[in-house]
Image (cartoon, rainbow, N blue to C red):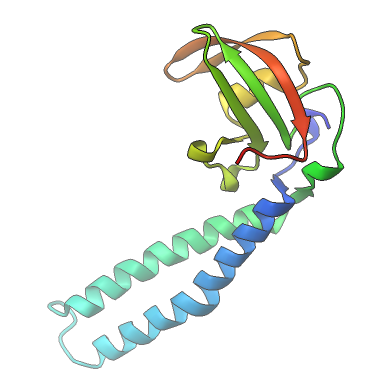
Length: 164
């Protein structure tokens, strides 16, 4: 899969997780917050009502997250890493890199909304993913990160077995 042909990609697992979060926020949590705001508003003076003020703030936070999830899920291109194979780094691949300091890092390239740096999942739009996309085992690339450039060698490539 070519980098320039991707349009809002998500892994199958990531889509499932984000869709569940969207459902929980939109159908479960948001209605509770709206009810709480209505109850607090009925108590009178809203300017000094902590429940009302907090409820409105929480509602704005929920709505912002729901809009973000909508934007990711709306036109998502779902890709199942278990169906991928090949010799080039692409979306859904798990890649082991060796940096210029001799440190090994293992990353799975995933969609924007499903990144989790702590569990080794990086966005397909990240500087490292952009640098290694389309490359093969043995290739050395330079990633232009905000904290400075780093040389990386691709030492292993696999599909269908995300970082755990």
